[in-house]
Image (cartoon, rainbow, N blue to C red; front, side):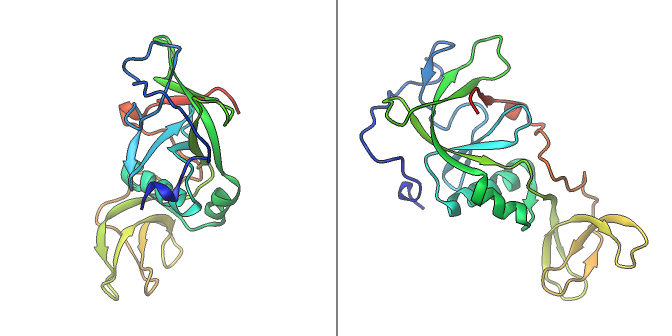
Length: 214
């Protein structure tokens, strides 16, 4: 995977090499992907946005394939969740992925964020190419330790809160992707599958950034 997979918009661009630490509050700077909130996923710099962390920002204009890999990696490595292959995932790629240009601004000391993003015209010499990914409606499930299917020995890492095979109770179950057998995990998963993303508890990921423009 190379930067050719998610290039910036064509045309010359003179983005100043301004470091976040050396930038005064309220002044613009260039995102390097090392600021508070960013994770490196498959070589892509990704960070959550907003009070509810319902969007991701990735540096560069990503292809659909790379955007999907970055989103999946964020859920697995940062949140410990697996994205379910539902229609919401298709909608995320078709309607929830926006390739745009922004200007990063260092927040002031009394702000709730370390930095935020303003919309920027692509012709602006300080505009930076990013991909915004809406993840609010994705369906997710918790990842569990690998467990071998009692029926066919196929390994499963995912669990889902669902009805038992005899439909008498609700619990977290592994479901074999090979033979469809269901069995209880060795340790219960911590919470239910949720259609909306809850805010991560990791301190450095709590509301690191926001966008001031829609």
